[in-house]
Length: 267
Image 1 (cartoon, one colour):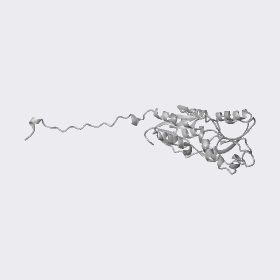
Image 2 (cartoon, one colour):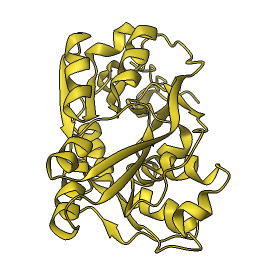
Image 3 (cartoon, helix red, strand yellow):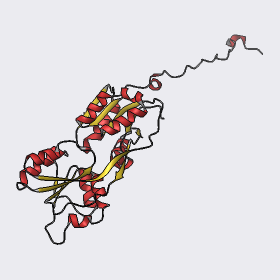
């Protein structure tokens, strides 16, 4: 590993792409240690005629796009198309790339914000299908159900462990973790990392790291374009390494050549 401090990213390379590029552009060294990978799930049936399709992640969009008949769900031939609502710009971009731009996007990019937006604009008892993975957080479902909507989950992926390489200690300025399962996997493989600064998404991830003995935890805002500036700030505030603190190597002075006085110059 490099001798200078680096930022460790724990999501998949596809999820890390924009963030890694933003860090590298600012001269921040990046080490990618993916702690999870995606396992796709094919539900036996798709929801019939929802009023709204909610997507909480880019992988949810990708997972739906892998299913037979997903076009009929997004744009049925004999019924009005459901409203498409997303959490986050990366999710919106994935949905647009599939050919179905979002009608509603949460601002800020949180499940709570999307729930407020939907509750303010939907009819009572609307049918809402939430496309997601096996793990959920943020209370989106509960908020919508409490408002009187009929909520159905469409689970299209699960998080699976990766072949995580185990490294000896190296300088780290910050570790970015987005899920409790990723935190557990990382520190199970390399417990020494618990003493590094963490930037995390969500209270559950922060609580998991606290339970695992992490000593410095910073909470990230759930807005993707704020993550790189936060990590850059942590990197620039990191203490220097021993290599950076070391004085320059001692150079032994050489003895200048001796010259006799001018009046003693030999003939």
